[in-house]
Image (cartoon, rainbow, N blue to C red; front, side, top):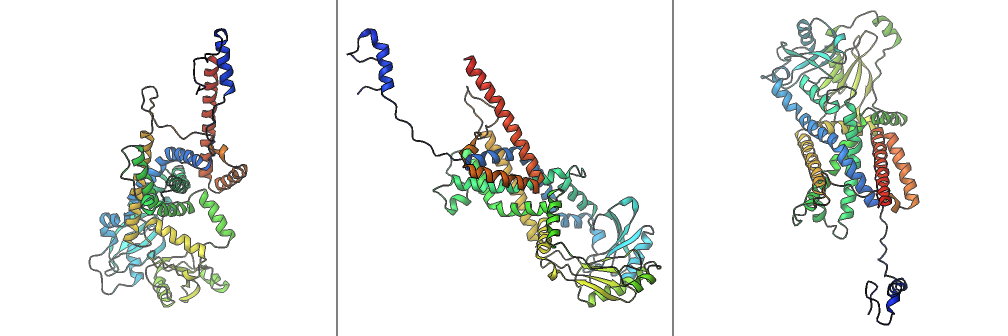
Length: 483
């Protein structure tokens, strides 16, 4: 049988028409077309997005993981560094009146305005906060032994956090760079859920026909050395971390600068914000009390009234600015079950004027409180801290595996050497149905508006990708014309 690839003309052809006959035979015998490949746009599109997001956003995630790991064990670090201020060695027995402890703190620190007191119990000292104009949001905190009434030291704190915890907190949130540094942490939180969900979908698709628990959850040890083995470790580790990382992303966004503001607006629109007690006193009491300064000695009666009303456990007592405002006593228990009951107390009568129980908070406010505590490692104590540490270490490993895959995918042949791995081919969106493209554009636009530091980097990725593609197409066209 004569093939179309034969370069020899048939014997019956005349010698002078050999070339023409060969062309005619080739044209008359068409080749068998290759089976049409079903276009797949979602998988390649996700792969390209996952690739670029992983390469460009992973540094932000790596920094967030490292700084978060450092912050995780701040309670233990505080006890190690500030043990003499935070704790007493002779816990137990009766305590001196809280007003005497406040007086001792005032004697130690005569300047500033008394703003808050956190009574000590067990081996914890009493913390007395004084505000000074030069400190801004920070306070000067004096630590008092609740059993002897003697001061143990003083520190500059931020919302009751020690200087070490404040520094590590700011390092995690903004690299100690202020408002500018917050772009890094919000970018990390904005993309963490995208990378996590995208990785899960890609791993699920790759395991088509082999979706057993073992193949999805465990790395493939039978894979040969190289990108396949690294990918299996990258994916399996990501699967184990997925729920925790999605939780960190969601809770991190709730108090971020831009997405957090949108979240707060939505919560306010739903009337689901965190409630607070009313501190304005009645007109008669206010008119007489406004002329008087606040007497710190009244704190004993205020605390007694709050305890009688059922406010137990560790509390923070907010001192009003004048006599027309009630004192506020709020539970500060962050360990599960969380205690956040709050009462307003009129110091003139030691009467509770308003009360809000944590059980009465809106569901969204409760979820936010629980999420913040879990993110900070205080919701379940040491177990919560260990879990956060494992998540941080696991995320670091996933990022390292990802960059290793990028390195392993680089061309190494002599005629195709490259310094770095090539991204998945562009144009995958053309394989999607038109309706899917339209819905996807609208969905991405909405998410990008709600989470700006997801939308803006994504627009930048697309712009750069389109520009690079246009330049390469022009070069290819120019080379073809020259050839």
